Image (cartoon, rainbow over all chains, first blue to last red; front, side):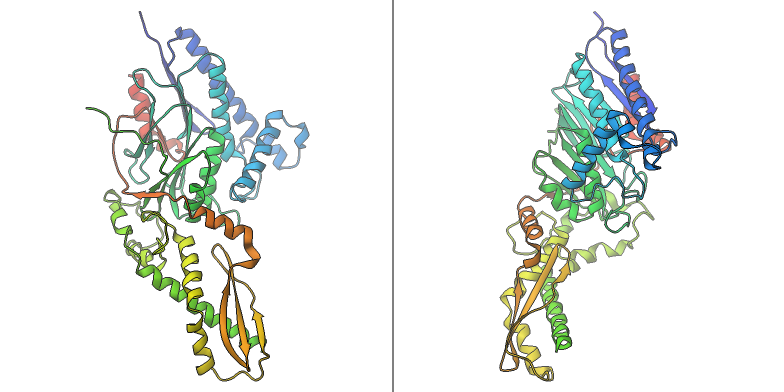
Length: 256
Length: 203
C-alpha cells in the first residue's frame, strides 16, 4: 500500500510559499487541494498587491475605487487591520509608509484562510509556509507535532529555537532579510533595535501583525509582547540578546 | 519667577535621572551571560553602532533595573530606566532640595505655597514635580506620580509583571520540518534553510 503526501513550492506574492499536505489521500486529491491553495493565494495577490497598479488595493489607495465597491475581502481585511491598529497602540499601521499597504496582515490572513479551508475539506495535517510565516495543523507522519525552527538572525543556515506545535501560527518579522523596512509610524524612522521578533498564536494574520508592531516599537516591544494574552514570543535584539516568553513551546531534545 | 522655577526643575530632573543611572550600574550584570557566542559576526555593516558600543549601553541605559521584583533575566531597557529614575528620586526628595536653597542666589520674591511644574516627558509617560515654598525658600521638591498619564502608566506597571526570559542565543541545526523567519527575498530564498528542507522533502 502506498502512503501519499505532497509538497509543493511556488512563488506567489513575491515570495516562496511551500505547502506540505501530509494526509494519506489519493494523489490527485492532494494535487487538487494544493491547486486550490495556490489559486487562492494568487487571487489574494491580484486583489491586494501594492506592486500591481491595477489591483483593488492600488486603485483604492489612489482614490479610483470606493471601499464599498471593492471585493468583500478588502473590507474584511481593512476592518481587521483597524482593530489591530488599536490593539497595538497604533504601531501596526497600514498607512505607516504613506500609502495604504495592508500587506503586513494580508499574507498571514491569506495563509490562515487557506489552512482553514484545507481542514474543511478533510485535510487534517498540513503546513503552509509563506516566506517564513507559517501555519501548521495536525502533525507530519511519524511525529506528534510539527517541528518549526526559528531562524537564527545572523546565521542563515542555523535556527535559534525549535518549536513543537500543532494547530498554531508562527510569524517572524525581522530586519535581517529585507533591511530596515519596518517603520515606526510615530516617528517615521526605520525600526532597528530588534533584529527578529517571532509571535506564536492561534491566528497567523494576527501573529504577523503583532510581530511587525513589536519590531516597530523597538525595545519597548519586548515588554509589550510579554503582555499579549494567548500568544508566546521570541525576540533577538540587534545587540544579540535572545529573549522568549516562558510558555514558548520549545521542543524537547530529540532522542538520538 | 517662572523662569527660575523652570531652571530649578531642570536641575531636579537632571538629578533624578542621574540617580536612576547610578541605580542601573549597581544592578547585576546579567547581560554578559547573554552575549551570543555565535554572534561575533553580527552582520557587518548592518548595525550602525560600532561593535564596541554594545557593552556600554548595558551599563549606561540600565537594562535590568536593579532591585525590582522582575526575574533577573528580564530585559527592561526603557521601562527600567524610567522607573528607577522616578523611584529613587522620590525617596530622596530632600537631597536635591538642599542644594538649590544653599547655593543658588536667592530668587527675588517667591510666594509661599506648593507649585506644580510642567510635566517632563520621558520614555513611558511623564513625571511631574512640585515644589513647596515656605518663607521665600524652596523647602521641598516632590515627584508626583505621572498624574496626567494614568492609563499609560497603569499599562506599563502591568507590563512589568510578565517578562520575557533571557537566554543564550543558540545556533543549532536541528531536525525540523520548516523554518520561520523574516520574509525572504527571492534571491535570498535560494540560500535559505527553507529551500534546503523543501528540496529534502522532494528528494
